[in-house]
Length: 535
Image (tube, rainbow, N blue to C red; front, side):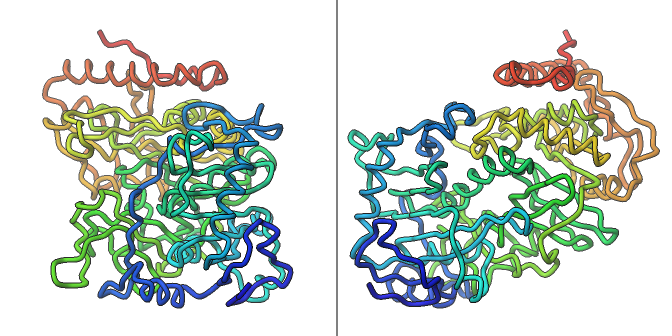
């Protein structure tokens, strides 16, 4: 076995069943990029970033993500159409096949850790078939010093072989690609797909099980930042709600943009980097992300402008899900280490294309838990094929695809911490006002920023509030630098009766969606359901 790079002397791939390899251990991102280009697996953009294609899959494949069902998981995992059970014997069979496939090949290994808080570190080893996959791991996980590498003992191992294809009929998968988590053996195997997000979200799924279940740490799919007064803020929101944009604030330090934990004392990043969408990226709209795309960053599935190496961020011919990964230190204004104290404010961001929800409203604990479990936003016409009018989207805890436990577990932990720490929780609608999509208009970003700034600065603490008649949310009657007439959504509609009908329809969607959680939700949560009261 030939080996190149820095490794723990006790590390032995043959113990994993991978034999006779040329193993590259913990190479620098620069060296991995050079190998990628030499192998004609990628090329450099004119900004210095490495550009690669992930091939057949340009996003995760949720239907092909499985969890091994055994003594550890049988009675703890919330089995559903997201958490799909996989037979332990089939896993062993597939594991032998994928490790045999990687034997006698070049492989790339990285020792790293997840979770910035020293009390909750998770040691990880990632083995990849391609060098550029290892660039992604370098960028996204917490990087180790040479001294740390020399004694690193992984608790979890990820094995990723994009060119290994499963035989669904024999191996028990749905099709040729798969991502399978085995909590007993602490191994994740990924095959048939080169989409790097499967690695990132595989470990996120592990943390979403281990931390709440074993360590009483709330794991969260969110961004977080810290102000000059040491005040931490958390931002939840699905794609298109403005989570990345609104948490990027020149006056606040970024803790992280996607995955965090809250142990009741501190909020901390799980990652060592950012994995940002680049579709329609511009230096004006997302200056921090745009500036971060340089040497060391890795672009996925982008298109160059004809005859150049200049990225065309508006080109969606390969995918709408063009991405960039970069280490968090590519951002200037970051919190080091990536840890903040208990949050003072939590924001749930939603893009309500129906124009029903207030632009900002304050939630009590029951409402916070209810809205957290609901995880609502809306997609508008043109965002996906087949969508011709606004469509409701619910994703439990704003991250349903990555939650092995029942959503009420995470929600009750949120409620308990919210009460203990006296946190303000706000629902912020970055969507439509004055009517639904096609009639009204999108909320101006300057107003949304002004409302969030007012909440962060405590300027909404002493103003008068009005209760929303259907959703029960507390709507401020005034807000600095925001026109008062937009704070109560019904007032912005010329046809008030049409607003009432639409509010009723949205409330019914919430209630219908929540039925699948009701049997495990406590009375406080259930009391926060919207009141379907409009005829």
